[in-house]
Length: 374
Image (cartoon, rainbow, N blue to C red; front, side, top):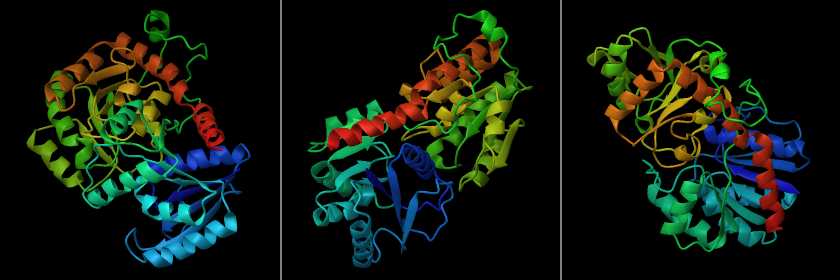
């Protein structure tokens, strides 16, 4: 079958584009013919794509500009390619896809949403609400990233379309070094004692934006730094809040906080860290948690909407904290630092639990969806 993925812009280095590249490459290697339509941009793709994947660049300046011209270009490409499936890689693109579905009724239309139901967008928020309504009525399937989010859609919308949960795959395979027996290591003290040594680094990874909650993280770090002055908090990433966060760290009197900025190879930071922290106010599906689990890193995470509770099992591969509870977050970081054996054991559990998110399992779910719709 031929699958057409409809994306905003593959020039971007975002998580959505990263996941699309992984899934598209995987399906291509399984024998599917893959094409990607990019509404904006001129290329090339930021993430490497298999040589057999064809990418079309519509060249629009945005969703709401040159609508008629965009539709003509998209219709021409659809006629040339005649895909079996059109998959929106962002629900807002449904404004175009619903019209393409009318023009090409034999093509199956799937909308793949990467943000949770309650996400508040600074721009186009009302447009997204309308797009959700259109998708819920006229698409054949809405794909969301967590069971939690699936429940929100089912409770808050009168869905006429099918809805499926398909997790994002881990971008790192076979790096945890954990055994393949599928047995958790929570009671295996010998295995925990033999875990490789790591630096005394608490790691946060992601764009420095308000939604990531780094302001709360810095506040919670203050008592931890005071009690454990030999540990460092390292923030990997860049963004519009960096200057404000650096000022906040100075006001709080923090000494052991490092801002790395954007990095090319994040894997070395996972390899060097003691554990991950996730302080987000809101998430779609947390790729950094998957990345950390692939490197056998436990996590301290706010149980924010949506999907975090499907990756972090409290006390098994990390600690879950009520969303926004800064004091408890600090206590859990202290607990993670203070108990070496427990931290290593939870890290090994994470290395085993990541298997449910490996690429083959996720591709199998996509294939079952395609076969079911056909």
